[in-house]
Image (cartoon, rainbow, N blue to C red; front, side, top):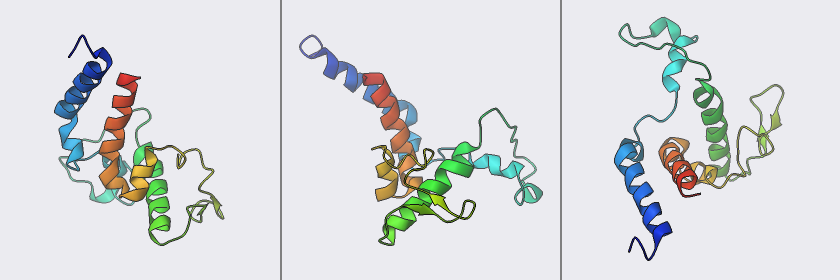
Length: 134
């Protein structure tokens, strides 16, 4: 099979490696940087003593930007309205045209159909699979 279908064999190998290495993501384990919220108010005052949250460059975007915007779009679709407007930024901003929301990206649609929490792991694995097989 390997010689007859090398691309399929490579894709299967990549899928097996990804599923073996990242299987906790598919069960809903943490995917993101929500632990970085302990560095900011109002959570900073109640941070557990044994929690080591040392900030690194670029951390926090998933927790404070990507997840809230995707959750808002998911809630709007669930209530029957199109995700066109974000009333929580400034006096309101376009949500559909916002680059950070990535609502036109097909893998983001998983988070819109299901919940962002349920879809983050699958989205991450599918991005790695696409990169590996591309």
